[in-house]
Image 1 (cartoon, rainbow, N blue to C red):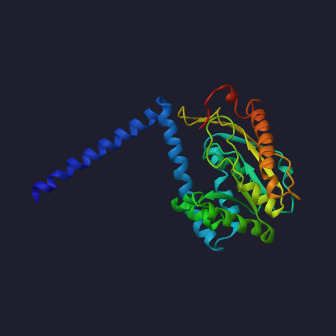
Image 2: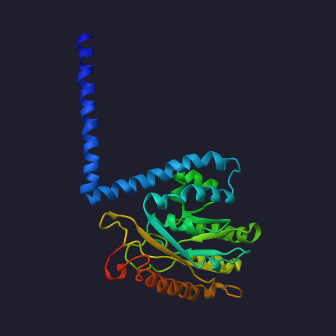
Image 3: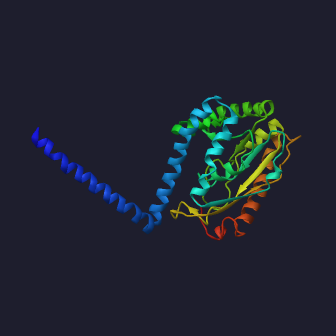
Length: 287
């Protein structure tokens, strides 16, 4: 017993040395290694969102699952851009229809899209997300309480059924939905072909489509290069695209037309010095 007790001072000394070493290494890595700084920033970004979700859950739980809870999440997330020195400039917000349901479609670059989304998110608007997000700890529960619509993309029949229900919800509960029609994050400096679910939804409900374009993040963020600095992003809300009178047969041309207009604006705002710099001149950029 005495021999075991004698080990304790040595163990505490080892822990103290490890702590001091960590205190020395972290600042050194922060200032000397851009890759380490990237990983630290992304770890904090994700961890902070999970922590904020823990704070939001009891507040949102008072209402239960309700789209109005999205206002609480938005309020709690808006400050994150300041922590990272990211300036978000919104243009065209007057294009949002003032008093009717609609479907928002937006390009999808990285998890940082959350910053632009929260900056411009209209009232009673919820994202459509992949079902895996539901199991993302506190963030998944907070999203569920805020009315986020989850779809299992691997089960086409279920996804179609959910979309039909969403179409009815749009009309009966005055809800707007936010969809990333590329279906996945895109790192190639353009836009992937659009999946047509959002456009079928808008045509079925006969509600407008509101395209939103976020400029390239290349001047401050690139996953491939492990780079994450301060910078600015422009969010452009485009005029709504009506769907009255359209049928499912019109969906392919509608999706192509909306994608073309969004891609044109993406190239414009990603090369004008206010959100993206010379991104499109760099092959394979993105993050």
